[in-house]
Length: 225
Image 1 (cartoon, rainbow, N blue to C red):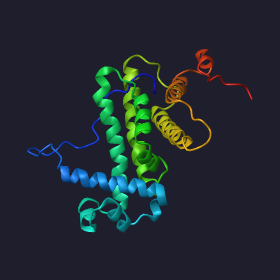
Image 2: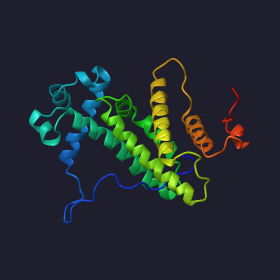
Image 3: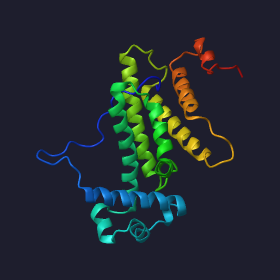
Image 4: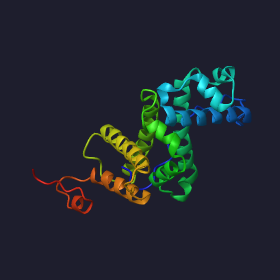
């Protein structure tokens, strides 16, 4: 399901109203960026449950009134961060699609560039709301990929496609979390290229029957108990 490149996913944002400007307000962008950075930093320092609005506005250098102009509460801010992480990744997918870019590889490259905000999402801060949102975005991408693979003549999955999408989304997210957290331990982590290659191999195994000799070559041979 993750072999090859991912087809262009549907846009995450609704189309702007007719006549609306497509250019974002720089002041709004700066405020959102400051609040996003403050939330990420404080979640990693003290944990989401200990973060207060007062902490956030002090860290971001804005007023409480400004905060509430943009966000209802800290839960909405955290959800916005998760959505922005997904949007940034998928925007890069779309921009690089014409070059045949490996999108699974790009996901891990982005994780290396912006590890802190992704850690906050993947750790399930905020009762897992941000994580569930990010999981939905990843599942959308995998669904698009699987449809593209089938259209290109790939062998259908041996299990229900909906279940397979969820399983693969969970696998990618858990591997991302584990891989990022490994950076802080004394155990050297696998190289990004190795992780991507093995995730792709695991997805390919899902398309092969138990008796298919290619399972052995991919490390997916089933041994009798």
